[in-house]
Image 1 (cartoon, one colour):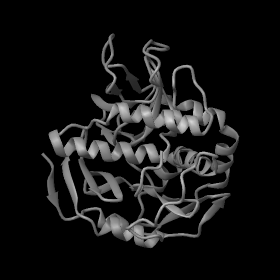
Image 2 (cartoon, rainbow, N blue to C red):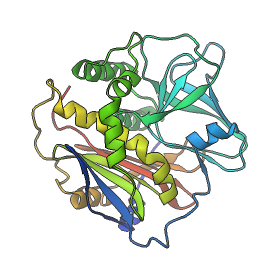
Image 3 (cartoon, rainbow, N blue to C red):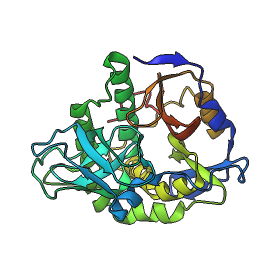
Length: 325
């Protein structure tokens, strides 16, 4: 059951200010800068997924020999909690997955986490465990899945996506971008357009004091990710840029949708941030440590993991006002 309470995310947003835009073709990154760089957490106090896997102290596997499409098993043998961010892709095992929401796995613990499949045509093991991909799910897919997970929380307390819709959306995006894969894998989009996507990553480098990033594609706000530490932002920013670079590429494609009406939540970064900060979130106990805060309203979806009184990660997206796929 999700309880409603005054938005606890407002404080996190009050502590940041939009910086000067970084531009590459039709993709624009607005750095979210800490108003008090000295007050931002220099050390996060947790390990991010890539570092945990590289250290050998973190392992992600199927939940059993038979596996389960919407679940994976995470073992954290480290001395710090492990942060896994919404939309991060895990590749290998029986099929590639993306994480359904941001999760903090306690130190020296094991946890079953909710995921979505992003490779419809494979259910056979390529490896025992998963590796972390250098990307997050493309941004429009993240937004739709976030909204679906919020709906499942409201209806029955689950953290599930609409798996058939996730697959259909990947198929549609892949078709528009002429990205083919024998297993219908989302990763084909990123691999087959790596030159453009890597150029976006090269252009959108973190700046001093940056703790978040708001993205605009072809004049429309996509959304933002905000972290409690500049160190975390620097680790995750390339994945986030790749996620939005796919949307920039899609906006240039022959099958791109016609321009939509401006978002009801404002067309400027300040208005969009203000709309999120002024909204009322629901909350529930998180999967793992902390609390899971969710926002779902017309044209806007958002989610945050709050732990030890701070928003460790907050993400918000503008939802399309009309069907674009």
